Length: 179
Image (cartoon, rainbow, N blue to C red; front, top):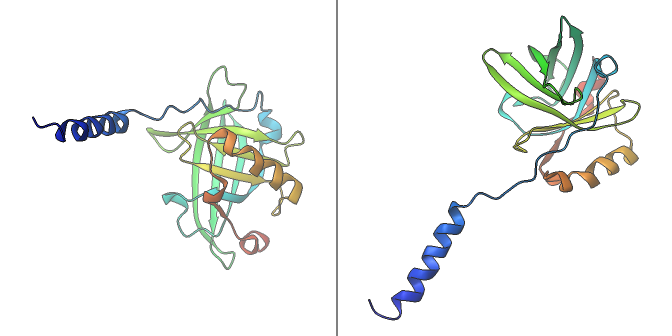
């Protein structure tokens, strides 16, 4: 082997090994405790990471209700005229030992997704939901508008949780105000 090839092969080997290593991500923290009775009711989607199951939704709502040991979920998607475009009904089960902050949600058994409450206002006026892979993110509020102060608090905390605030899709309020 000639001398000029040795450094090149060494660099290629290092690049290959670096590419094979997973970027270690810290575990996603959740809020300490969620009162599911208080959490129940109607939430308006303020922003989200885009995802395939909300494609075409300009606005969305989520309604939660405790029922027979689980949380009943009804997600509604609205178009830009405020018309109901789609609706999904599911069940959420609390992950034991999570203080009710980690839920496993299914809309189509046997498939489940992680729904982790990572931020929650003391008075339950807003909530931020994520998943441990940082693939999904939702900002929800009780009303159709989030105050500038609340928005600032949420956006300032997202990077430390491993989320990119610039990837957020801010949903339209027009659809939310029409129903």
